[in-house]
Image (cartoon, rainbow, N blue to C red; front, side, top):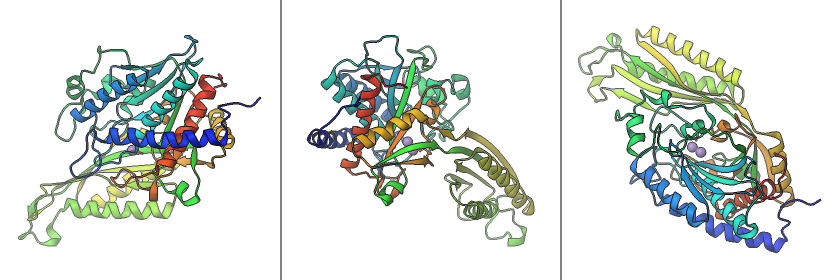
Length: 428
Ligand code: HGY
Ligand code: MN
Ligand code: MN
C-alpha cells in the first residue's frame, strides 16, 4: 500500500514554491530579533532578546492554530492535538539560541520548518491521530554559560537545576538569576522533564560542505559525533615587557601558543573525523607592555568514536603538562562538557530514506560533526535528523546561507514524514 502524501509532480512543485516563500519569511522574521550590531545574530539564553524572541514565537504558534506553552526552563512547545490522547507525541524542532554573531539558520531553521509543516498538515488534513508538536528549545549552544543542551537536556532528564547553581557568564551573572528574571526556574510552569514523547525529528542545516560538494539535497544523519569541551588555565608570571630578559620570563601566552600549535599538529596527524578547536582565549592582564601572567583558554574536540576521543584528550592533558613543565608554568585543566557519539534511530532513518525516494529527492547517510539537540532526545525516544546544504559549508557565522529552495525541500521531507507518523500512524 502506497504511503504518505502521494503528491503529483504539480502538487510537489506547488508545495515547494509555497514553502520556499514561507520559510524565507519566517527566518527573516526570526532574524529581526536579537541582531548583533557587529553582524549576524547573538541570541543568548535568558537575555532580553532571547525572551522577546520566545514570546513572539509563542504568539506565532498560536496564530498557526497551535496551543503554545512554556515549560519551567523556557522551552516553548506548540501542540497540534491528536485524536488518540494516550498516544505519545511526535515532536519536531530545534534551538532558538545562537552562538555570538551566528547565522540566521542554525537552530531557527528547524523551528521554522516544524511550524510550516504542522501548519500545512493542520490546514490540509485537520486533526492527526498522534499529537504533533513543534518545540523551540531554549538553549543548545553553551554560548553564554558553561552549560550546553540545557533545553533538550531538561526535557530528557540529563540536565537539572542543581547543575546550574554555581554557573556564571563572563560578566559574572548567575545562571539562576538570569533564568528567574525571565520568569523561569523551579516551580514556575510545567516540569520540563517529559515522559510522553514517541519520536523526535530535527531538521537542521548541515553546517558542513558535503551535500553542496556532492550536489545532494538531503542528508539523513547516521550518527552525531561525540564532544569533549575542556577549559585550561595557565599561570606564569606577569612582568615588565622592557626590563625582563627573554630567558628570565614565565610567559603564559608563549606556553599556550606552543600548546595550541601542538594540538593542531596532532589533530591533523590523526586525521578526520577528529577535529580540535581553541575557540576562546583570555590573556591577563592583556596589555601590550606586560609579559602575560595568566591565560585561560578552551579546547573543543570531536570524534565519531568515543574511545578515540578520550585517548586524544588524554594525550592533550599529558602534552600540555610537559609543555608547561618545560617553562615552569602552572597548568590547570578541567573537562566541563562531555557527550558521547549518538547513533540515530534505524527505523526513522529508514522512513527518511523512503520519504526522499518517494519524493525523488536525492539523499545520503552522513555523520554529523556538529552536536545537536537530537543527541539528547535519542536517550529517551526514537530520534532522527535531516540536513539541508550549507553554502560553502559555513556556519556559526553571519555568512551562513542556504538557498530558499533547499530549505523548502527540507520542509517538504519533514511534512511527509510527520504525515506518515502522525496521520498514518507509521510504526515508530
Ligand atoms: O557546537 C556545536 O556542534 C553545536 O553547534 N552546538
Ligand atoms: Mn550551533
Ligand atoms: Mn544547531
